[in-house]
Length: 114
Length: 115
Image 1 (tube, each protein chain N blue to C red):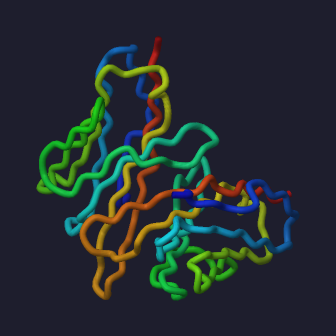
Image 2 (image 1 turned 135 degrees about the vertical axis):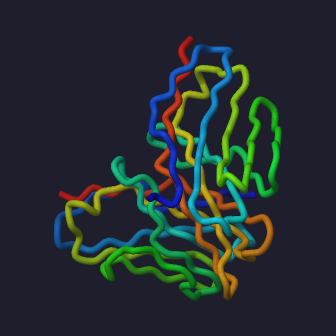
């Protein structure tokens, strides 16, 4: 089982629709969760971070975290063609001795159709 | 505040050669992590440096090494290059406090092609 799993897609949604991206993780002690957007040929850029169970909203983006189910999702409302990119889920686990371990999923490719 | 910078941006090498990549973190950040990104494997963690010490390491062979200087700048070295080392190498910086909220910020990457 992969530590962080995402559906590779592509996920195709029409412009203006809600895009729902999902991520599951295996380590129950993971504490911080991040969504990055990566355009083709570019480096990942942070969209959202979430640390507590529930929803966190930032503009058109909403991150949802359910630690009991080991599940984190990203909703993009009013999807735009400029949202077309690969979305990476990252899970941060703090280990003993002050170390941290960051594990990325392989990403979900989102295509927003005009 | 300036972002993470990486040099060079593109590099072409041949098998057997070695290469050194450089990363300058955001001012005030003491942690630098290195990742390898390939189409098939995604983002894979190489190692993390904090205050000139490697404190975390991924599952890569010893040909991959790194170091960090007192100004937090970091270098990554790959010796005896193989074709499979062709990838985008990304570095990410953070405060490195490893408590509470900790966000990594990525540099633009170095694209390495091994022929």
